[in-house]
Length: 397
Ligand code: SF4
Image 1 (spheres, helix red, strand yellow):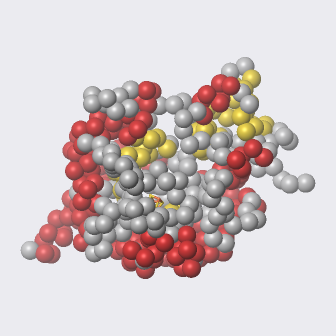
Image 2 (tube, helix red, strand yellow):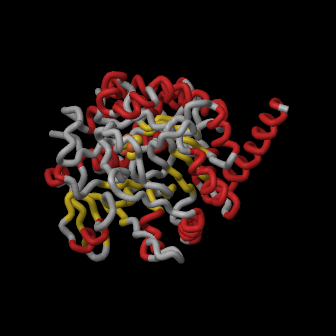
Image 3 (cartoon, protein in one colour):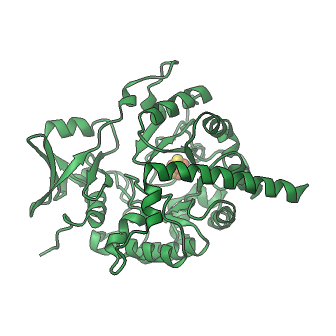
């Protein structure tokens, strides 16, 4: 009989992200309405966003139930109590210009994603990534661009409500050499000027490394260039735009350079589990960690028309990949404190309990997970940047 994952939050999170859940309670259904899944807090404060709408979730063994105002998740063999993560209150409010805050900022646990211009020019050329949900496709219509003031208002709403501590700016592909950082610059600078918060930036790799220095100098605390697929041939087939206009080699060079500029543990790259064989993902993990980059491993969520997922794929097959990730991070002494508490992916910290013989939590890791720790991390990162930018100026003078 298949072993239940119910009682181990790390493997339960992976299983839930892979299989999704069914929901039969109207209150929970309403809760899940309007977002990409349902956010739930599993035991041991493990946050997960569970797919619940897609076709594949109909066959999931998991079901969320409600009894006497308590919530449970069951797989048919037992159940564990969980907490529903409340929908942020600011989602129901608008900017002074009338834009719903929920259109500008989306909370994913410890970070809130803001995409000031939801547009990706791969779509114009029909070379978009094959797994892309298409939200950035503005072909044939006007592109929305939120103003700096609208973004600052949104960040203020996020931080006032303490919805997350990290503001995560993302931008799709555009035909510029800087990867999109020049476009994001006024937003990042304004947020850094007005608030004491950490800022992460996801762009495509810029053509030259001086844009990476610039990314750090303008205030980004963390940077992501998402490779997505390590296998070269699959990368070319599944990500034709990234392959032809940027190239896997440039992703790797830019990540290696960024890891030398940014603090340990703040440069990250996604490798999507389920779009390539697990062994290939492990090779990607080895490569990224060897250059000081944190691999983040989201699980591919197939929609009905995008049958890209490798089969068979189940938690027994992919659990070793996450264990490998944790061991590789430890081996390469990469700081685990920045990439954590994310509802959409399993982070290396959450896998720790799955790796035999390493269930201890270091004092520093616990410290940085605390509210005081977050503030200290912000202070340290500001100081470090000042010194680093000064060093660069001195050497170029
Ligand atoms: S880079 Fe790829 S995944 Fe990202 S928005 Fe463009 S097409 Fe979609």
